[in-house]
Amino acid sequence: MIKKNIVYSTDIGRLCPECQEKINKCFCSHAPENDSKFRPIFIEKQTAGRRGKPVNVIKNVPLRKVELKKLAKEIKKHLGVGGSCSDGEIIIQGANKERLIEVLEKKGFPAK
Image (cartoon, rainbow, N blue to C red; front, top):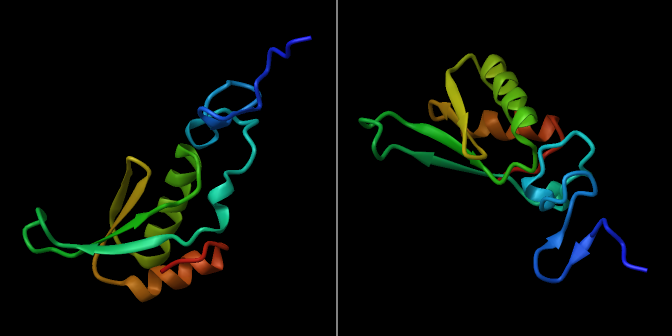
């Protein structure tokens, strides 16, 4: 008997049982947590293309789009700065990497 719902494929890896998309691209509410939950989040300082103004780019956050926007809002409110969220990255204005690391670790995300 052939199953209709594919859970794992050697071609594309783990799939969401609801929408049959890759786990890291799934946006449905029933998707299991991403396996990258315990990988460190990287915070990178950038000034290029921003007229010399420093920003911190938070990469490798293992959250879906909606949850990522909520986290960005909480970080901006806690630090009292502006920023945005796009392409799976959070951009925070200013050069405050140490404070960002503290906030992310309080939320349960290891950061570097």
